Length: 300
Image (tube, helix red, strand yellow):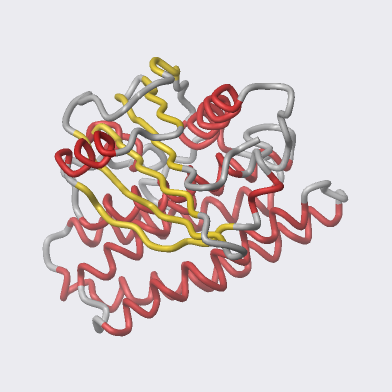
């Protein structure tokens, strides 16, 4: 693993799992370096083979991790396995379809690596919970208020994924400008009725750039397809972490679509209808905000 640096803060202390994490992250790094070389056609075959290796090893890694969880009788095994199934049966196949349809062009490779990196960074936080660290999203904090639950969940995600604190600075955020940012609108539809949940995630661009590359020995200088794809997947993972605090609701909603918004579109949407929950956070890398519109469903 030349030029690869593993951060021990993300080590579970379980050799087979840590080795798997290192290999997956190393593949992402190698592809990024090839893309940065400036001549994609020269590295095209190597990139395609790296993508195939990532998919193959992800399946192997998930199986090894599940075997370990069973060996220690991990309490939340079934819930964690569902996260693996989502990645191996839905996420990766959907991105692989994009690769095939585009004949593995440079943009599709960047999307694949960005989404893979976004999933992986969020995945680490869940894995740390296996050994008693990180985020245990299966628990219920019924004795606390909704805002406190959401804020704590988000803060734990940032700590588990990016190893940095996230301080809630405004629990009544309604779209106020906090700098040059990216905005994602993500929708979830109830599978049982007409209810929905809509999430707008606003992330300061410097946080996006630094956060996306936090686990790599390189840094991103501009927002490109790979960074956008990683941010999209991390935004979706953020919602998964948040709704994990509410098991009674967690199985009711399925992904219904997302889109990148402009600052003006966000301002107009939030002016038309204030979010049910609007939280603004400050981190050492910048600000981010989460606005939840629960539709007919209210978190209890």
